[in-house]
Image (tube, rainbow, N blue to C red; front, side, top):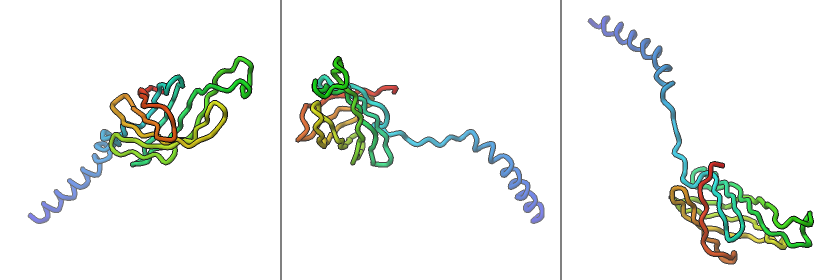
Length: 146
């Protein structure tokens, strides 16, 4: 009887090793994507914004592209009124649906300053609030396909 049990175990082990790879092919591991991750578009005042965010754990990174007005004497072309400026999202953190990050911003006269933003992600919208000394009130960006 002990011999029959041993044979049955060997046959079962061989069967499982043969079908295990096929069983694993249908199983996909998917990491839950953060609500904050993706591309967000909208306006802060009259400035178009594109915010691209990546989340790794509780760290938030990415880029912010703004279309800013350019002072007349700084324009590359006589008819140029705006310029796209892209900066890195730095020191970003996410906690649940709350985000916070900093950017080195460029003003219309070429001045540079560090700005901090805090916000809340709500499904397909991201409400941001500039923190002093940055100016402007809360504004909302919408999730975009790209």
